[in-house]
Length: 283
Ligand SMILES: [Zn+2]
Image 1 (cartoon, rainbow, N blue to C red):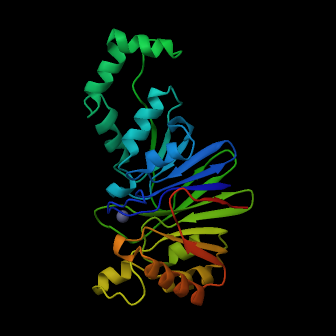
Image 2 (tube, protein in one colour):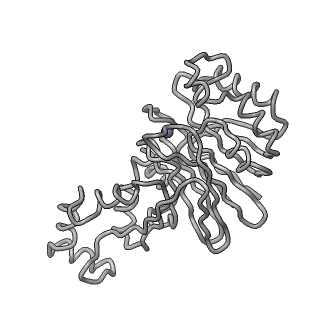
Image 3 (tube, helix red, strand yellow):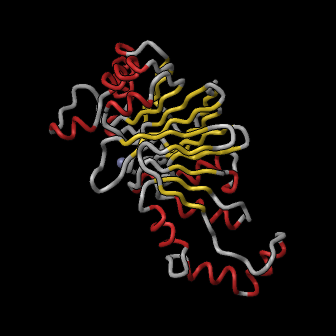
């Protein structure tokens, strides 16, 4: 499996980081986890086309995890790509319909692109046929505990505490050829997440707070520190641990050094802080 980091940031604007997005190539499939703002541009920078993405999993529907969703679907459609397979919590089907349905936000654009003669001529010149259908991503709503099976891989999920009850929030584990990749999404620590991380080869875990940063008790329970994440990863038998989703105020040389030292004190495997467009081979 090959991981390309397409977004390691947060909702905050950042010159070096897009919001959340992680691309995993598994056999012939190209599986994107989350699609926050800037992820689309990093997909192109990484040398891929929008229609290369075969599957998209949403951990939750905070904007920084789905802002580039419509752009990806529209651009892949415009290339004539196969419909994207989308998995995520409700109401992702309603959101998709609100973008691409008959009365959706893009209805005027799609009518123009499919019904006007000059646009039809451009489409036919690229090998397309008429009538031209609108984008039709294949959406499956899932929740924590659900499993999704690919040809050579499967994804398991669990509910994680983050933005309930407004949003259903999940973490995902993908298993392929004896290897296991886990992505926490945005998550407070919990028994289900620790179980999902058991014997993982590679764990991406969000980090919203450094050790020593005091917040109100409810917030602290939802935002584990690098040492707490490292301790959990050690208990779960994780082999490699990468933190992501730093806030701008933490994203300094001092902040990184503090996070790396705290993780190293708790966790013996390889650890680090992700950067956009990094590539990791898993297995
Ligand atoms: Zn979130």
